[in-house]
Length: 344
Image 1: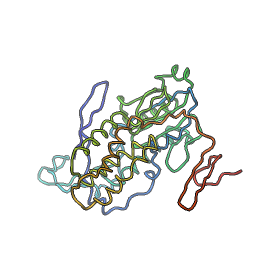
Image 2 (image 1 turned 90 degrees about the vertical axis):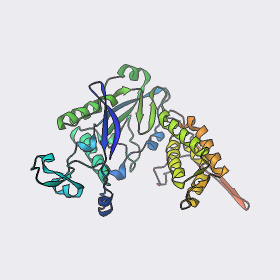
Image 3 (image 1 turned 180 degrees about the vertical axis):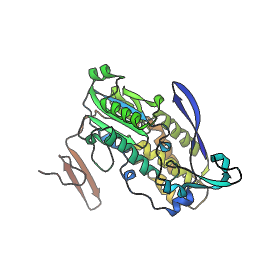
Image 4 (image 1 turned 90 degrees about the horizontal axis):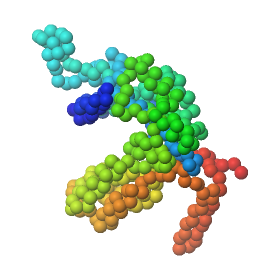
């Protein structure tokens, strides 16, 4: 199938189509390749960044153009990516008297292990070819790097966040960071095309994995475009009368993503998940008032789906709990690394 998309080349907007293969039968037969997809960075990690008060966040960004078509698979794999429909041989430079099956040579969009390979490829380009320091790497299997720069590699995207003094950020705005320059040089060396229309160099405003960076305010927020989309879906559910379990799941997935930018928003969602469970095999059902209340409350609070990365952190955190027969309180005054017990 083909999905419409637009891209900028030489300052001109072009309409194109993204080719996606239907590889469901092959995906069922093949084992998922292990590797880099298990370490994909996610936007929620960055809400834990601590930026100094008054500092700016600058973003450098680069996007590989048609990344899945830039990397060729081994010849021996073509049998796995051949299409059922045969074509005349002269379509591929053979005799018109024969028919052949066409196979993809590049990484197929729609293949279950495509993400692993493309993520491995961009990490190889960034860290092995370009020589960008690995200690700035952001991935979900490791703590945030203890540095003033964070490198986020996500499939076809290279992004680098830096935390700069206001005067420095304003002076450097528009100038690429050395890591960004190294990445561009590596792409040019390997013949990898990049998208000019998505390039950012020390920008104070930009997009990152469905979020908006407001660098001059040190704010990371759910993008306006996605918030507007979620608001429309919320109102559609509210006035639909009867809905399917899939519709509620679709809404809940988008809502959970928005809540990663402001974690307390997750506290609104309870009855929604109960409904997903009991309505799974029920066909169309009416939305209960309790679920409708959560959907509309969440939609109304969407403008708050943001994190001020320069907010101070309390040095003492307390938790309380109580029951009819007793109660308890705990106080924490030290940070810990994942599940490790902090030293005295």
